[in-house]
Structures are given as structure tokens and as C-alpha cells.
Image 1: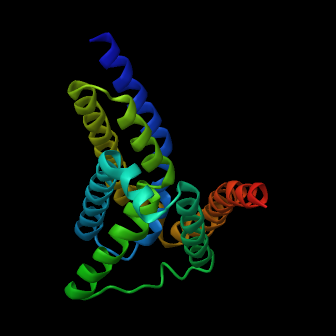
Image 2: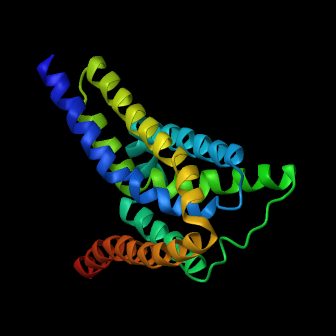
Length: 213
């Protein structure tokens, strides 16, 4: 029982750190600033559900899929870095906030677009959390340990969902000027994160190429 508790605590803390819901919230706020509370909450719900399914799917079949398609985690980091950089540039130039979604059909389409990419993948379920899921699943040798792993992942993503929901209240406090300032500030931070993602994936790939030569 103590071993399961220790394993569950390790899973929870590692996933909470890697997913970083508090860091995701400002980006979520800027991307959903034109939506009303109901549609913003729907976006948060869809993004966290999609992220949960993605992480659990990779936990059970990640290594098989990576080997089958010849994909490396470093390549995943490279792609994530490119997506983050483009998104950060849009935030810096205030292009994200200019998206107008007035009609019901437009709102539904917009929610579907951003809830999967980039919110669920690669923001919430990024290379770090996916890799961690694969590694932790290998360490979970018993059925009970696997159940603890899935439960801990669910708990982290439920907390992430609650944190994203609180963005509605923060947006009201900030107002339009505050939203614009926050969006540009977070744009810079996201671009820095993108650079870290990109080069952390590029470095081992280049090293492997040099070793082969």
C-alpha cells in the first residue's frame, strides 16, 4: 500500500509539473478571450478530455507507435517548438484576440479547432507528459499500479480543468487593456518556451547525426 501511495505521489507531482496548468492558463485566456463564459468552459472541457485520452493512449501504446512509425520524442519536441513559436508570434502581434466568433456555428468551429490543437496537443499533453506516461507505464508492473497511474493522470487533468475555468473571473478583472498587455507578455514567454522545446529536440538529433558520421 505504501509503495502504491509513493508511486501515485510521484506520478501526480511529475505530471502536474510537466503539464503546468498555471502556465497554460494565460495562453488559454488569450485564445478564448472573444468567447463567452459558456463556450470558454466548453473549450476547457474538450481540451482536458482530449489531453487525458491522448496521454492514456500513449501510456499504453506509446512505445509501439513510436517504433512502428519511426518517431522519436525529440522530433515531437521539434514540432511542438514550431507550433509554440507561431502561436507566440500571433499573441505578440495581437492576432489571436482579433478572431471574432459571433455566430453559434463559428463559435462551435473555433472551439473544435483550438481545443485539440494547440491546447490539448501539445500544450497540455506535450512531449514531456507523453514521455512521462510511457516511462511510468513501464514502471507500473501490477494492475493496481496501472490503476493508480490512470487515476493520478485524471486528477491532474481535472485540476487543470478547474484552473482553466477560473480564467473567466480573471478576464473580467483584467478588462480589455489588461488582456492585451497580458497577451503580448505571454507571447514573448511562449516564444522562449518554443525555443527551448525546439533546441532540446534538435540537439540530440544533431548529436546522433554527428555520431553516425
